[in-house]
Structures are given as C-alpha cells and as structure tokens.
Amino acid sequence: MIDLNLSLRTKDVNVLTEAVRTWYRHNRVTPTERATELLCSAAVDLFSQGHRTPEELVTLLIMKFDSPLSLKINAATSTAHH
Image (cartoon, rainbow, N blue to C red; front, side):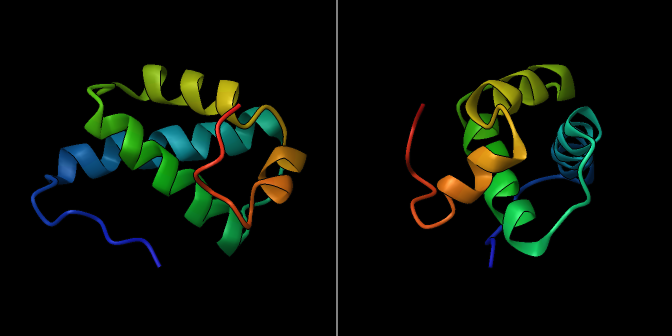
C-alpha cells in the first residue's frame, strides 16, 4: 500500500492523480490495483524530486513505463530504472 506523505495538500494529490490517470488514458488500459500502486509510487517519487505539474509527471511516467507491459516486468522491483 502506498504511504502518501500527510503533508501533501489536496492540490498536490490532484496533480499526482491527474498524471496517473493521464498515463492510463495515454496507454488505453484499464487501471489495476498493482499498476496503480506502482505508478503512484513513481509519481510521488518524481514529485518529491521537484516535478510539480501533471504534464511533467505524466511525461516522466510515460518515459519510465512506456507501456502497460513495462509495469508487469517491473512489478516485483518497483525501484528498477529504465
């Protein structure tokens, strides 16, 4: 389960949510619990690195996870980098 830092504001959570939703729309796939956990974790990491807009976040998520298959390959090792 994802432990969202409680100091995140609603606005920040909305930015993260929009980035993840856009990744799903871009890839035309239905969300799954495991994929969402992985994408949200990656989005939070990117956000904490200073990427604060949905556009930045989704671009980086698409680069890191270029297809739904890349989520399955990395499911066991979410810290893997491409």
